[in-house]
Image (cartoon, rainbow, N blue to C red; front, side, top):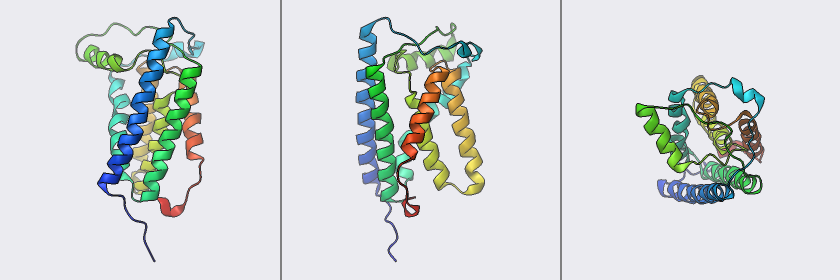
Length: 203
């Protein structure tokens, strides 16, 4: 019986560069377009007034970047690597189409910050203008990464994967990066990516 072959680090890196390149190019292209359009509608709802601002939640929010980079090297088979690549490409391209066709802007300013948190949010703002909101690509990517992580850890450790994903999802709101509608849309987009064909030998 031939066991599925594990991808080499070079293969994982190649997939990472390709998917990451699509993300960086598409995200910045749609972001700059929305910025040039000037005043835009917002996905802010009355329910968003109940969402608090927690500066420290930028830490779990940013943690997804490290998991994104590592995910390609965690795939145990070439099939799993290909599936991860296609899922991420799907959510990224679908989100970019939405950002391009329905550009939005953030609905309320953050409170004034000082010290390390001001620096952290300044760094975030240097890359991420207040656009590219719905569906939340952050949440859609999170769903894909959560699915991969829960498939490779031991069952008794999956609670930590679920906890991490839950905290990151919450942080998309408490950093005031996304509105509730954005997060809901991102979850739906991520679920659509997971709905593709799967095989038990692809983990």
